[in-house]
Amino acid sequence: MLKGKTALVTGSTSGIGLAMARALAREGANIVLNGFGDAATLAAVEREIQSLGVQTLYHGADMSKPAEIEDMMRAAAARFGGVDVLVNNAGIQYVSPIENFPPERWDAIIAINLSSAFHTIRLALPAMKQANWGRIINIASVHGLVASVDKSAYVAAKHGIVGLTKEVALETATTGVTCNAICPGWVLTPLVQKQVDARAARDGLTNDAAKRSLLAEKQPSQDFVTADQLAALALFLCSDAGAQVRGAAWNMDGGWYAQ
Ligand code: NAD
Image (cartoon, rainbow, N blue to C red; front, side, top):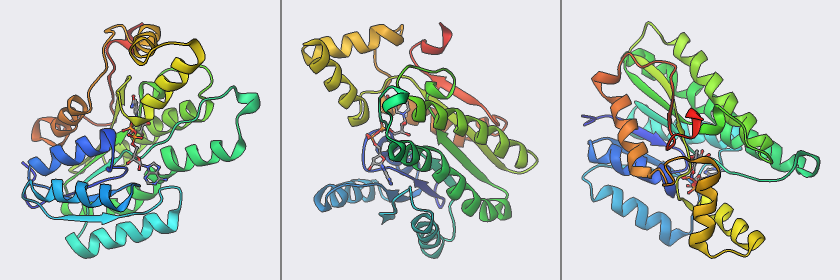
């Protein structure tokens, strides 16, 4: 479906982003990889994606730094001529009551989880418009639709990216470029495992009991969403069938938002 196209996935060295990169590569897209990791991890990720028969470019841009994002977008254009599918996925979490929330953590979350998407979109859009085809997929969260306590920066950033998604969808509405958000519930990635570990320590629970307690609080299915399920939704948004899905904030959350 995506042969000859190029997909850039921010934060694709782990979790949801890595699953997105694999799925897009299986459809034939060349992949621009981004995210942190030690040299061995980065090399293994690149080898794995290349083994799917596509070309890769890794760029280690820190998504909190606009100049590094600009450099990554220039490198993608130089290597592949532009980005056809842009998945804004890089994200971090920090959990604390707002009175004690460190201002530098707020700034980092807003920069990485929200402002980075503004920068990648503004830089990717001219080539997408020229080709009259493009897919922008913002990995928001169910926290883009509802709040939870102690996640002020995350909830603000995710609500912000849902708003940005709608706005970009309107700016591109008469073109072949679409912009949508995916809003996952709990997915068992390193980002969530940290919250499971914190709960296990706080409540004296085993790892399994802490997972069950986390799910019971918010996710009616009592089961994690998988990164592969989210990647399948992203592929649908890339397909012709998805061409008129515009400005959506599509939750895949085990029923979290239905409550
Ligand atoms: P993860 O921690 O497994 O992966 C995050 C990725 O982002 C990694 O590749 C990491 O290196 C990269 N990253 C972090 N800071 C970066 C920076 N400054 N510059 C470049 N890359 C950076 O997390 P995940 O759970 O896969 O999360 C991916 C996205 O999905 C995030 O935006 C997160 O908010 C969102 N999300 C996750 C869940 C969940 O339950 N896991 C739920 C809803 C939304």
